[in-house]
Amino acid sequence: MMVGKGTNRKSMGYVLNQTSFLATLLKSNPGKYVYNYADKPDLCMNELIKIFHNTLGKNSRINFKIPYAIGLMGGYCYDILAKITGKTYSISSIRIKKFCADTLVSAEKVKDTGFTAPYLLTDGLKRMISSEFLQDSKMNNPNEVKVEDVVDPRRPFEEKI
Image (cartoon, rainbow, N blue to C red):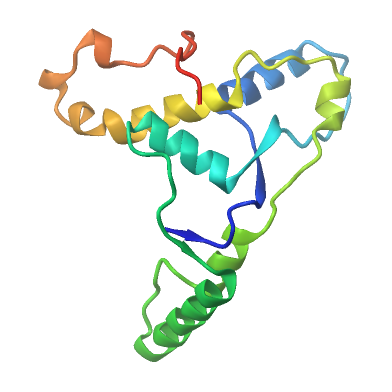
């Protein structure tokens, strides 16, 4: 289920790219530096869901979209329910707002260092999804884990999105 049109963009960074960038900085001139790291290009929610579904071997079509206003009203209903019951819920108006908003950072300063990310963001996402959702049940039982089940982070994914 998608709230909104899914065209909102998100900046993200793959952890192996981030650590590679930090390792590169350790070799640079001493000093104080502040960087916002993000792998580019930024992806919209529709693209992220397509990557997620394709990696899981599911139909990448988003079957059900709720207009933003209706999704936000649902979030407000959960806010009220949370106040009445004293419980917290995974759905709230603030989460709907954050989900549907652009979350972008400029990584121009990273680019200016000449750093080149060793991994594509899409490959990093596929590895993470694969590790968290496809292999989790096997990882809970070490007797069922086979060498071919382990994702090699140095091997790029072959399939295209």
